[in-house]
Amino acid sequence: MRQAVPDRTVPDPAAPDPAVPDPAAPDPVDARLGSRLAELRAEHGWSLGELAERSGVSRSTLSRAERAETSPTAALLNRLCHVYGRTMSQLLSEVEAEPAPVLRAAEQQVWTDRTSGFVRRSVSPPHGGLRGELVEGRLSTGADIAYDRPPVPGLEQHIWVLDGSLAVTAEGTEHLLDAGDCLRLRVWGPTRFRCAGPEGTRYVLAVVRP
Image (cartoon, rainbow, N blue to C red; front, side, top):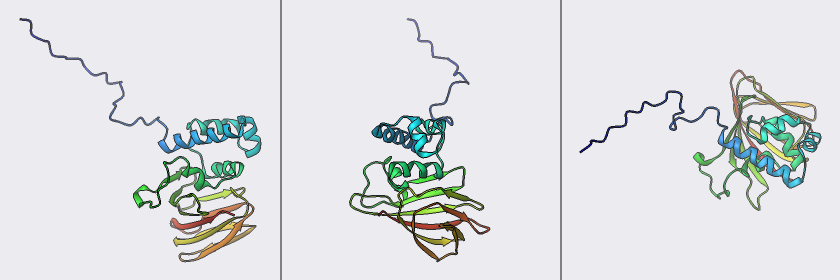
C-alpha cells in the first residue's frame, strides 16, 4: 500500500502573511469616509471639477480623498462640510452605524489629522432630533489649525479648555484660553485653533447648529 507523502511545500517568503495587516491598505475610517464623500458628490450631481470650483480644493486631492488614497486633513473636511452644508461631526457620524442613545467611551469615534497633530473624539455625535454635538479635541505641542470658513454659517460653539492653553482666533481677534476657561461664539468667518503652551492642550467643543 502506497503511503501518503507529507506536504513539504516551503512557504514563499515574499507572500503576504494573512495574519499581518497590510500597511498599504487604507485606514478603515478613511475608506468609509472616502466612500461617503463620493456619495455626497454623486447625490448633488457634481463632477470633480465642479466640486473643486465650489470648495477651492484641487480635483486631484478630492479624487485621492474619495478613493482613500490619502487621509484628509481637518481643513479639507471643513471646506467640504461647508459645501455640503453639514458639520464635521455630522459627516463623521454618517460613516458609522446607526447612532446609539448611549455612547460608551470605547465606542466613541476618534479621528486623527496626521498632518496637524489634531485628535478629535466624537463624544456625542449628531443624533436625530438633536441640534447639539459634543467633541473632545487634542492639539499636540505646536499644532496650529486654520479654517477658512465655518462648515455652517452662524454655527454656535462653546470651547472649554480642560488642559493646557489654547488660542482661538475668530473675527480677527485672538482669545487666549487656559484650563477652565470657556469661549462662546457664533462662527461666521475664518477661525484658527492653536496650541499656545509648551505642552499639548485638551478641550471640549460644544456645537449647536442654527
